[in-house]
Image (tube, rainbow, N blue to C red; front, side, top):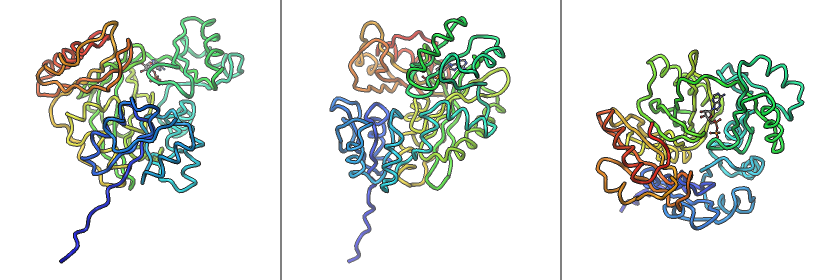
Length: 384
Ligand code: ADP
């Protein structure tokens, strides 16, 4: 009797247990992996979908070591980590994907801008300052038509840590306010035609699969809607793919890489990168052959990437951001032709509670259904 070879299932450790880890947990069976999450509480969204839980803080070295002990590879749900600690794990032989040096591009906006500038990748014009009296600041400000956009180089997300001063006095005061926490990225305020996001999966062997480009809409710094296909020309879509491939190899990303671009009257300009599944790719759960969550797990566990082709002509994803009054998950679920994803979080105004996706072959129907679902669920944002 021959022994059947039973393939060992990789155990993927995820730092963080938010909605991204929750949706990785849902995809784990498709990627033939198991997941263990580092959660701060048993109420965290991913606790319900993972195979195992380590309780602890993402910046606690002992908790990280406990997670690593239960994992074949460690990956991320968010980038609010201490990169020195992650590098320490790597030195101890823990396989971390993406690596700490790749993750630096997502953790530190000033580092990202500097490295991309050196590589000839288009970014907004910028300077990095430590305080408002920094000698670099005044010559830079005189080159601008408008007041700049100010960003904390580390620690911001969903528009937190991004400020839009309206006059010079406010610019200087806000720089000093942000500088308390670290260096401040001061950049030109661009006239945006729209914002688009390019998602790709990169395998541990450097293979790349590019999802189609999407248009994203933000309100108060938070993404509220993602539309596939993006409203761009063929040339712009090609440019996004070319830049994304260049960025993926520069960073040496493994897993999902999301690149947010500004579309201006001139070129595409890079805004942000994320080295994990991203809000702009949630539509791929229903809309693509292989979702971003499955592909992230396939990539970080060293397996071949899945097919990223879209399944329909159109897809719209709307984030459900808590309104003044809670809505009804049941009403949203009762609607036909919408997929409702509940992040298992308690309702709070302005909190991302879930998302709704509609896919199909008619652009208007898909858009209307996605917003109907999101309104029923109780989103507080205006339809776009
Ligand atoms: P976060 O890291 O919090 O997501 P972002 O850097 O993506 O912050 O900025 C949030 C939003 O602010 C962007 O999606 C865009 O709408 C706007 N924004 C950021 N930088 C600029 C800029 N240089 N010019 C014009 N708008 C900008």
